Structure formats: C-alpha cells, structure tokens
Image (cartoon, rainbow, N blue to C red):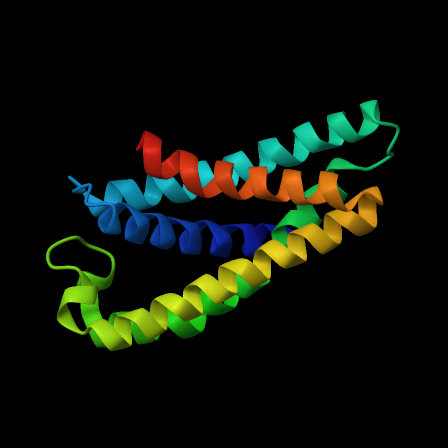
Length: 165
C-alpha cells in the first residue's frame, strides 16, 4: 500500500514545488520535465532519508526497520495526498495553469481566492509536519530529535528539487 501513496506523494510534491518555484520568480523552461523530475527526486529522497534514519536509529540504539520508517514518513503525508485530490482540482478549475506557472501569478489574478487556497495548502503541509513529528516521537521517544528530523525531511524533500532542478 505504500507504493501507490509514494506515487501520489511524488505528484503532489512536484505540484507544490512547481508552485514554490513560480512564487520565487524562477521561470521554468519546461514545466512537464520539471514536474516529472521533481516527483521522482522527491520520492527518491524520501526513500534515501528513510534508509539513513534507519542507520542513524540503529547507531543510537533504536531498533527500527527501513520499511517501518518509510511507512511512517509516507503515511504522514496523507494530508498532502488528500489535498492532491481536493485542492488541486479546485485550484486548477479556478486558475488553470496560472496556479503552477509564473506568468501571471494566480495571486495577481484573484488575490483573495488564491490566498485562501494557499492558506489551506499551508495548513495541510503543517498537518503533515505535525504527523511526522508525532510518528517520529512515538518511535524514538524523543520529541526534539523527532522535530529536527521531521524538519530535515521536509527541507530535503521539498527544498532540494526546487533548488536543483
């Protein structure tokens, strides 16, 4: 069940990264190539991070399995996957490709509606972060360590594709 969720997460991550890139004012030469590359890179980074956390936990004396860590991280992104089905359709219906592309920004077309949708996206993102922290905290019994590795995961999975592609 994790594999389909990873695919859906990759799609949502790519759409969010495309939107972040357009808000930052970085033009996309080819949005389709960027989206596919970002989706694949986000999923790969999530899998690699799960493996690294398994090794780090083992060195810290926590016995965790790679599959457990990957499942925890993937299931924590359920709010984003839900927003893929609900919000992305609404965003595309209201703004079309302008929600994801730079020219013009959706915020310039209809600021109030775009701000409301963006706020809901941020809430879903924060909900995923809370789920990551709680799941990691239950596993490691250390809230500070859990919050740090959850923040690092989000920075890696969403930041690296935006910067590197």
